[in-house]
Amino acid sequence: MTCAKMLCQECATQWDGIWHCAACLGLKRGAKVERSALLSWFGVVIFAAILLYTGARLMVWTAAVIAGLF
Image (cartoon, rainbow, N blue to C red; front, side):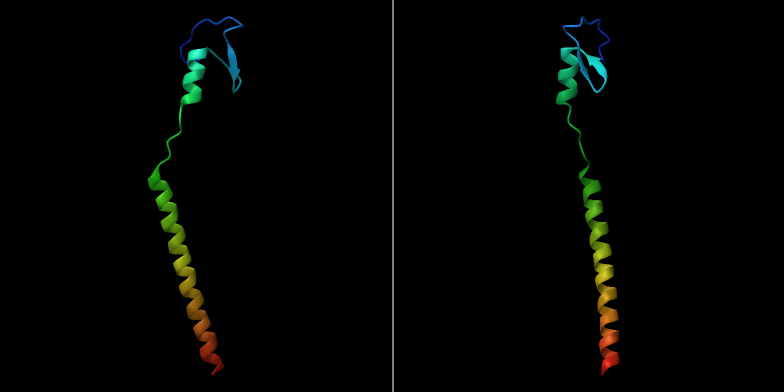
């Protein structure tokens, strides 16, 4: 518990193996996890760079194979 109040069995609620009072449980349930948009954009940029690199390598290899056929 965050408040460290004494609780009776009727007032206490167990969540994630820890006993909480109603006020602390309400705060814990209402807490939202904020995720960074920067990390998401970084992942998109890395994925796009890998896709661009792979596409360029594939086109060069395909052109070399086709040029060898003629």
